[in-house]
Length: 289
Ligand SMILES: C[S@@+](CC[C@H](N)C(=O)[O-])C[C@H]1O[C@@H](n2cnc3c(N)ncnc32)[C@H](O)[C@@H]1O
Image 1 (spheres, rainbow, N blue to C red):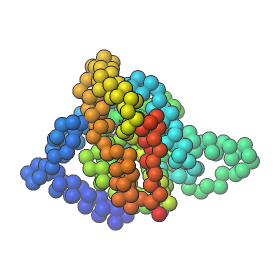
Image 2 (cartoon, rainbow, N blue to C red; image 1 turned 30 degrees about the horizontal axis):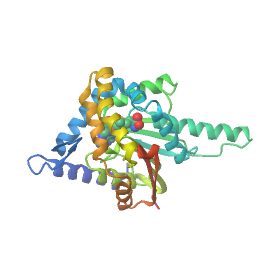
Image 3 (cartoon, protein in one colour; image 1 turned 90 degrees about the horizontal axis):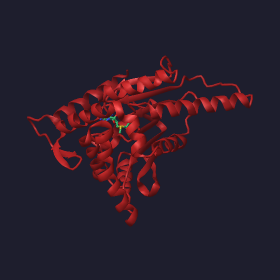
């Protein structure tokens, strides 16, 4: 790994330690609607995902009535993956995005072959799945085996923190984060890391549950999120609190406009977003130029 990158990682780690050390200042941050210390937040978020991991896929399907699959398809179609690409999916535990990226690349290769075009890409495709939680990564690795991708060299699993990535500067063509960024303690640091690891021309895409502003729809959506989702969590997974946190964390996440500004502040260009289902989810994107 380049010396520059090691130095950057060390600086980030020291910064994190310094900023989060409880004997110095454990700054308050939000864990859903609760105010907690920064260090406590990452532990609590870790507990949430260790707890939800075994039922994560089932709960995703139930809570979104299967729509999360279409939203993820949309994210990957906007990314437009290509053979030889180096892609990083952060907070990608279950592998949902990484599998789609690989399928899309295989589709491009198949079509090229059908059109009689040779595969001249010298670079090997690499899709990295990075997640802080080993329980979520285990679910993803299990899915990879089920899909016959257990031994695939193009798929690499990495345990790591979005705020202090262990990848080289300017090493990725694409960066995605789906339903992950609202869980990190310092969103700005995660965005700065995304910018650092992307090559010039590399694309940042974020899929996140967002803010609904259409009046009547907002009331129905609030009722659904605050009454039904925690109840499904309790009934299916025996864990109401984790799903209560997930719902509250959506409301604490910045609005689409504010988040777009944060992405621009992280030096990304051509920042834009697309609302899906009236803002239930939004896909933000930017380019490192
Ligand atoms: C709601 S899940 C999303 C999983 C997957 N991307 C999907 O779309 O289904 C959020 C993920 O973010 C991960 N996460 C939370 N904080 C993180 C951090 N600081 N760095 C990396 N991953 C993190 C959690 O472990 C969890 O796997």
